[in-house]
Image: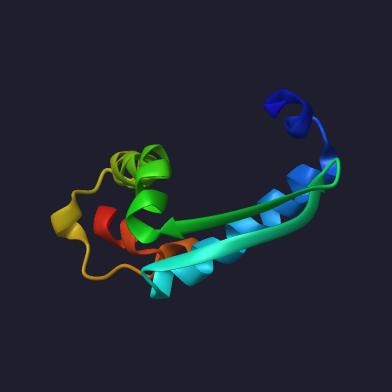
Length: 102
């Protein structure tokens, strides 16, 4: 049934929006919950998540942050010590696990 949910646009849209909302909340709080009424075929879904669990789920993305920065420095022929400051842009840059990578 997981594959059926993945191909259901409305359910994926709800999940995506809720994931973004949870990311914002978990940037400031240690836990949160999601509630979906009628997520798929009239099935209700409730979920509680801790920041540590969220960070484990997003670990692969966090590693990519560091890789992108290293690639940008290499392309610019710079070392990290050449930088005086870094300007963070975008909501994801406020996420604690992203800040750890930076």
